Length: 256
Length: 337
Image (cartoon, rainbow over all chains, first blue to last red; front, side, top):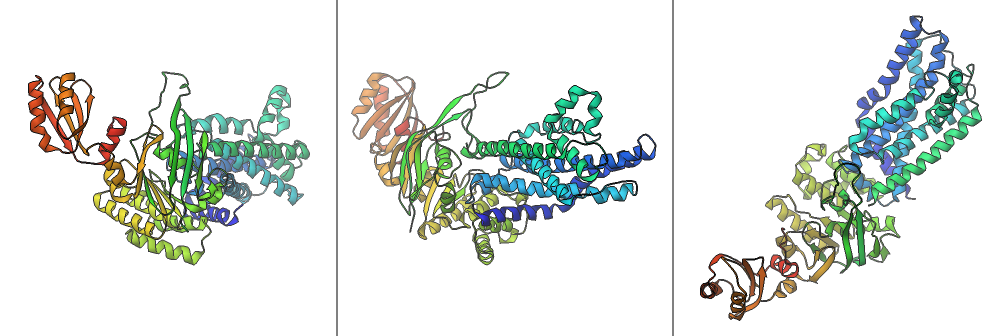
């Protein structure tokens, strides 16, 4: 392992992120802001949803924001760099094993996902004001869940980014991301699916379910949620699985 | 100490078309509708090379000959189906990270980092190689100056012309002062002035004791720049030597490409009998290639012989000893085909 090379590649990504700060800011903030505004403010304010929905919704928004950002931050540059600008070749020729180049991408994506998740909290506080009842009972659990969610988002981005063709980007978002979000227990708790027992079992293959439920367990434990242990084990499982698939796909792309 | 390059019996078969990393120039055999069938495309067919430490070596061959795939294998980007490759003492596929430290690569098509400025591209590249901050900044400035890019140093490369991108690619490859510099079709698409600048820079780099491997299908370039050449076709080496040696191996040296109204065996025999003619080859139905040790002075005799056989000479093209003729002699095909 060559830490100097790894550090320099992270520095490059940070430099590019700084340069594109405004664009990145819009990309990261706008969506959760609108979600919080429509679902938390408009729907609750107009009386269609009970006050408690604000608190129930928030962990889901954090999860969506993180997963979207993590996948996007890793997959999009990879698709462009491998297939279009081919600029990744510069890093593939750096004196480091190819797998570490992929891991560097994952770390950079995780950092962006963490920022995207954490900004939802002040955002929600700004838009929703009082009435959001969140409590970080055990900060360590909350941090652990955030890291695991960030990791599966970024690893998912790696796996998708190295498997998709440039012309299938739209398909990736409509066929993978959209169902994932709607069946991800983001706008409703998993227990709400009690009346749809088959669906309730099927959605368990969706890693976003564990992200939403885990964050619910950490932030709004007053609502029923999946047991914390199950959430942690599942998230860890998806992290490892997606990392493994992602690294394999990356190697396939990097070396012909 | 200078570092050599060696390959032994390299073979590579692509499933479907070769990727961009290897030039991607072999036509793809798509079937109508459905999934395209897996097409096996042999790109390297037992390619063995020995490039001496500190020489400028050229791989000359037409598109699809396997030049880029060879460079891909030597630069860790293409995994050979079988065979071995070494940079110095290090086997490329066993010691990748170490090998990458020894080599610099200028790709066939620009792959510059579009999110960075010209100067940042050089500085970050050096950082990937662990070069200290002061040294990498100094070196970047020196190379920008040398490649006449100082004025554009702080601009994003997105708007650069093809020639500027190519110059910057070469500067980037030199940033970590590699022992072996690979240049894949370095002068393709460059204007003559820039090409000469490039040749000067390659020669200068070589004089500093570095090994240079370049691929080209430009004979002039191979002739002007390379100390030794390998002519590559269909994935293997068909001839190796200095440009002079290779040219001397063409029978006679001169090539006369003739075309007749009609062509007979009798005519070919008569042509073979002319003084100075070394070899006669029929080409399709109406032509003949003559290798001879003289050129224009043969034409009157050829015309006479043709007339006496009832075949009218309709077209003549004379070329002097060149690598192009050499390629034609070995493969029966022109380099540009």
